[in-house]
Every structure is written in structure tokens, then in C-alpha cells.
Image (cartoon, one colour):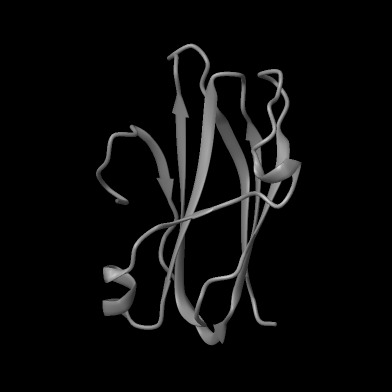
Length: 120
């Protein structure tokens, strides 16, 4: 869930309400992911506040690097792109980033989040 769960490091965007319906989301995120760490991206969509609040977070897969977030050397950020196609059109959406690691000394970091609603 957005506010609870076993992962301590997470970022949830504010809920975005669109004037027009959309049928896709494109996400760009610069990620620094050393070995032993992981970054997961989730999204949630809806058309009313009720359907949005009741909706579940859905995992998104990167479109590059064979569907995995690329490793880095601990200092370099690699741009990761996600092309998301929800099952239905939407007017409300949010994105959640979860950062995990097997060690407190190797932590993933993210910067430059860009989220674009698409209308195909």
C-alpha cells in the first residue's frame, strides 16, 4: 500500500487529475542501482476518487534492458523508461517508487522523475 508495507524507502507522487481521459503513461526515472539493490515502480489509475482509492497498485516493467533496471557503479544514474498501458482509460493516476536493498550500505537512489499521461 502507499503508506504501509514492509519496505521503508518509498516515494508516492501526488494524485494527478486530468481534464481529458488518457490511455497510457510514460515514465522516465534516473536510477542509481548498485548490486544488491532494487527499484520497483508501481502505478494506479481510476476515473473517480472512489474507484481510484479502491484500486490496487500495479507493477510496471522497464521497456529497456530486457525489462530490468540497469545496474550502475554506485555513482552513475541511468535513465530508465516505462511505457504503461492500463487496461482502461483513466482521468486520475499516481506513481509509486519502492527502493529495496539487501544491505544498508548499498542503497538505490533515484532522481529526475518525469511522468507523462498519453492519449493515443
